[in-house]
Length: 312
Image (cartoon, rainbow, N blue to C red):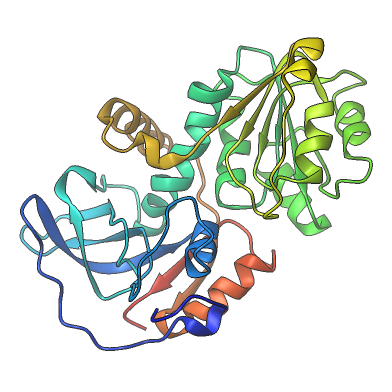
């Protein structure tokens, strides 16, 4: 990227193989992850500001050039490439029985889903949970983690019948339309006429407002994205009157805190290796088709995890 803008600013080019700095490793990339946040980076509207020129991509799977070990890694940037560097402390071995695509899906999306339950909403046994964008990268994993992590009822939302069917297949107890109009009523109805205990919210705007209204007293809404680019304001008086809580989550705050990554990632890997957790791969694009991957994810035309193959 030499400028900010639409998907067309993503241009394939030849660059020298990067040289790892002290404390870094060089990785031959087999798959690079595509995240919705990458579309915000492309327009410089993300929480962390970007600097040009930029090779985007914050996560990769591949092989360490020095040891030949299969790994996943958080690169910060530079992931959309044949070779990338990453801090050794943010590079993790992929265990036997887990393929590269699954491992990469579990790195950002899986850890996010895990922390939505355990760290942010602190879901107690039997509580009712709403998972928005339930066919997406985080959502598809959060639906599957619901019952193992204690949820009593998992209510999924998605924009199409196909995506709602996928959510039910992955273990949701109910799947409803994600349109904000009438959402509060649909959530309550899907929970047997009762308000819910936790909502994992990624859209912002009207979806956030409707979800907040569906919370029971002492319910928690976790905001971990603003896909609509519409931010919300919360008034303290309203929080007091309803005994509800709003929690924010940004995955970047887990970095530098090994206790928030190592245990959770090991748990996710073990579940995947046992066949209890399925990574939904919604598409693998050649590197040159990164603009199409961005257009597809922004257009809500995808499910699960999107990947780039730098060798095709």
